[in-house]
Amino acid sequence: MARHKEFDEAEVLRKAMVLFWRNGYEKTSMQDLVDYMNIHRRSIYDTFGDKQTLFLRALQLFEEIIGKRMEQQIKPIISVKLAIRRLFEMVTFSDEEKPPGCFIVNTAVELSLHDEEIADRISKSFSKTESFICELLLQGQISGEISNLLDIEKSSQFIHNSLIGVRVLAKTTKDKEKLQNIIDSTLAVLD
Image 1 (cartoon, rainbow, N blue to C red):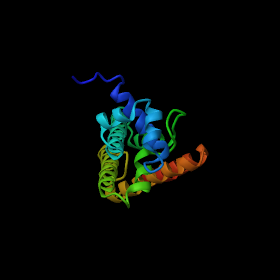
Image 2: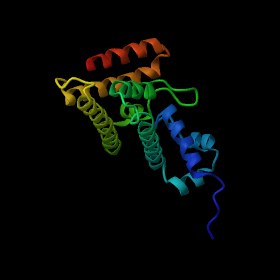
Image 3: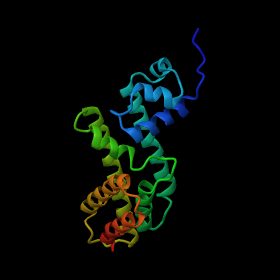
Image 4: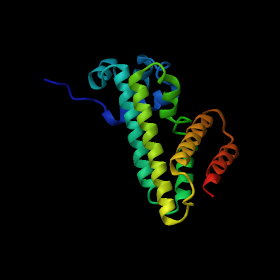
């Protein structure tokens, strides 16, 4: 007879996500996961598989959380410029509960050159965000908020690159004014 789990799978997966986000894959040991998730090593293996499988599940959870936040906090904003600003602020300025920076960007920097599966996941995630920005810019052109002379594809690539850059910088500085200046300068291309 199978044992009843003595933990909430979603809660411990969220804990694993935070730990991997904070420490990275390589610097997170199985013992770190056991201690932080507050479950037995055997339970981790039985529920999630090995460390890499758990990491991939944590990465997927992060993508789902960000996707929902984008749907709820960005899409309803009528002004495209304000929506893109909110996207930057959402991923740049974190609260005390979240590690600084972005789990996706951290993973890209740490593992993309060493793991083909991770590199593919990161590439798809980046493409999805760039497409989201492109859709916003297209809406802005349709509504007349953004000039029809703006090259949507190139601008989406530029804005996405800046978005990645501020997510990296957010790990190394607490200077909100500096980050805000970068966001302002990036969004100036839409004027």
